[in-house]
Image (cartoon, rainbow, N blue to C red):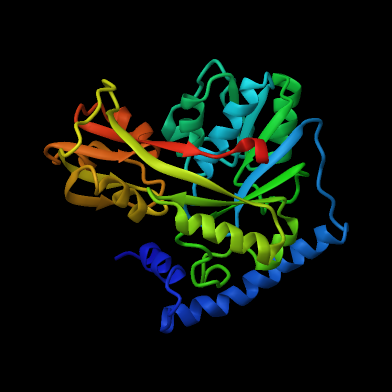
Length: 337
């Protein structure tokens, strides 16, 4: 077990203890001071967020790791494109090789300009799967938004993972919470998964409980509790497994097939749970989040490999014909946002 995996385990263990946890807890004090100071300065108007000439929606979360932002971002983009809006998604581009100090156009809505290894997993997946929606990456979100407005004529901007990026003014703050992981051990980074204190709820416009499951009763109950407790309108987003398809031919994989499950995402356990009812998993292979695959990672795996769509965009570059991606379906009532 490497250090990153051990820290992730600590983040979601409410009974975490020991030397490493105590060291991380000490470091959390300084992280908390920095986070609180930044939020205080913005809350009091000492630092001011930049407003751009477009309607900005931020999709974010309180914790690190995969919560389900990408499918929610995609659903929002499709909704506004269907309404006739000129839409852009702006991301930091984490995991990509492009210089993210510059504004990088991954897609202008028609043309695709960069591959997955350069763009980053999520921006590339969004660019490939969304028509008529621009995707840009840059660490300076203000600069990226202004570029999208000026050069692409954008009227709606969806800020991917933008809740803590307070330099940019947003018209709607959507915050996602995983129905199973919640807030982990409820400690600030690096001792826990929290990017800021729960007092950040005062900036939330709508809360979305993400249920990555096939049964959603728990998430629906949690949504009612959170709405009453936090005083924020709360919805449920249902993310369910649909089917597995070959990433080269598009052919569907027959249910009941024996597979090797492969992933490099923030929360791999949920992906494996999605596969278990429909496929016979002979082995689970997990890499660190945003792992850059090489041929040696998969060339000795016999039989069918099933991975996530996020991983598939990189694995497709290897040209292997035995790799399938699990297609997920997202159910979210966007009219309530």
